[in-house]
Image (tube, helix red, strand yellow):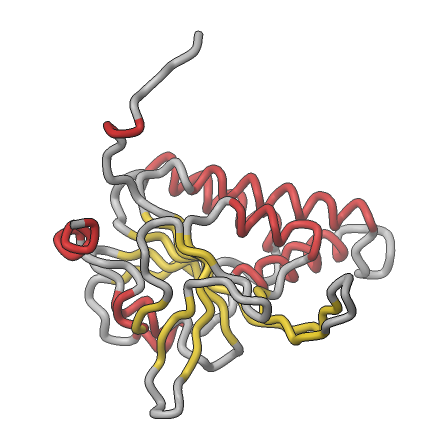
Length: 231
């Protein structure tokens, strides 16, 4: 049966973010500034930078038995911790992708090398996990490493592009499920911030408000600040 609701009756909901940048740029450190209670699913073992933060819990995901461990952890969060955390951080999805493939390759018959079918399994596991997490009543934040390529337009113009390091067949799907895709950058004064507006050279978007960028400390705004921005 079809269910309708009016667009002007949409209430505030939690959002999904994908933040990316080169290793050491401060993606994990950004978690310190998220308002509320945060759960970090640590895949790349960089959570030591969060030492001393009282509002952050850390759960290490096995980087060896990743296929089974990841599925069990995501299911447990849904059953026991739905709505408990304001923010759930997957740190990071680039490493999660590689660990899932390695686990599948280890259990396969190709001397540890993933086969073509393993790539398809990994792609579905990542996307389905994100869909599941989006229904748990928390902000979902994915971190990713950055990669670049040289892109040539049909007219022959070339420029360098920066985008999250993800398998090409799953990258657009993951970014499409996110409300914000932001690239972490450092300006000439050493100040860190996020680019949230797309350009020919940067994959980014912001479907939550009109900001084209923000300081590292202001990616996820407290509710009272969001209301002021909307006004």
